[in-house]
Image 1 (cartoon, rainbow, N blue to C red):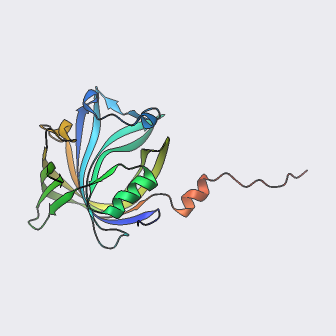
Image 2 (cartoon, rainbow, N blue to C red):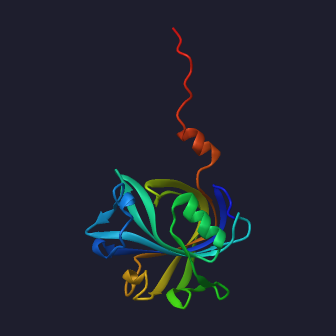
Image 3 (cartoon, rainbow, N blue to C red):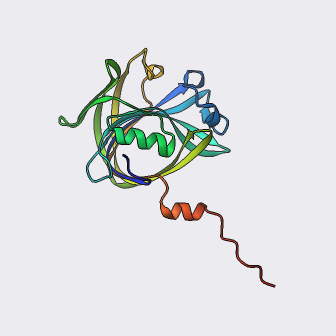
Length: 225
């Protein structure tokens, strides 16, 4: 029903970063909360909210809305996805079963036909989730490496998943309009401190055979005198 890991994905991302008081954040699952802590500066935590359009050329193509919290695990930075919606059953099932990513289904519009404006909306059934108007600005020269680790609760353990890739960058401004009574209501009325478009990216999401080989314990050999 879904591809095995790793997933090779291509597309466009429209990302905004908010600084949210720690007390307003959604609760992490207990097993995850015991392993990681939100990375707090002045009582505020960095939360990323993004629209993503995964395009043909990757193993799946679909649309996505997510929010994620910057956390640390004994000083090592991690990203933990708190809310996420997709319009692909394969993506939902694979994300949940492979990596513990709590994907739900939604209907989307991510309209970039009138660039530099990108108009995005998402709703789950009859309930609106959020909308955004993103204005794309300057394009930075070159392509930039992307790399981070996603930490999620998977059953009664923590799954740590590497993400690597490369993409172009454009500066942007974004007006977010989350449904105040919805799951992203803690972002309502807040302005992002930073917005970017990550353009024409490619990502490898999940462990490759080389990753698994590096993490496996060495084979025991015969002792030599």
